[in-house]
Length: 208
Image (cartoon, rainbow, N blue to C red; front, side, top):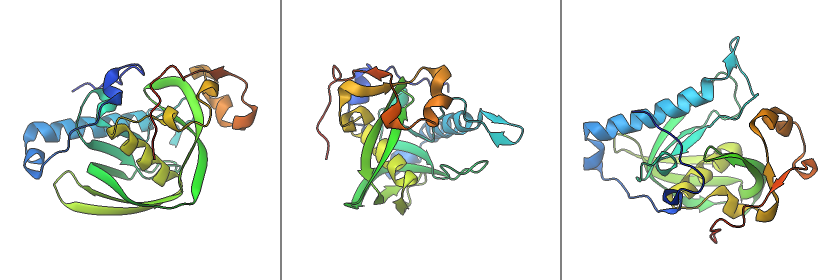
């Protein structure tokens, strides 16, 4: 199964994904779909590894929600080894939901594979507690802090039809980052980045 990220204007990115039952998770075709999502994140995250070390000249994804590639189900895959070179820690989250969020926030630049040249600074809860099913239908709970917490919040937003641009302080000044300038962007303070794009023509939804 070949997965292709949807264009940023695709209406499916604004749709709420359907939950899955344990019975549906026992279906072979459903498991193959989950494998395809895992493969996408694994290949994308490792494709820049050169000489045993992951390169950072181009953006890659550490997570993927079903509707980002047209699978309209409550499935996401996250690599919670975010920020750790040459390590992976994949989780498949089925019907994930935030059951607790800290009032303390983390502020960081954020992007999305559906928005190839758009980035922006978002604010998200620094710590969260997430409940979900794994791919076998077992209940799991994760307590996350920092980047991993922000990553899971990003993917859960996707499953509810929300995008990171909804969380920008000023959607008229999202960061425009050409692919060949991604490395430069990573080493520039967000406040000093001088290339902007107006994403306010998107349907920016109010999120909690």
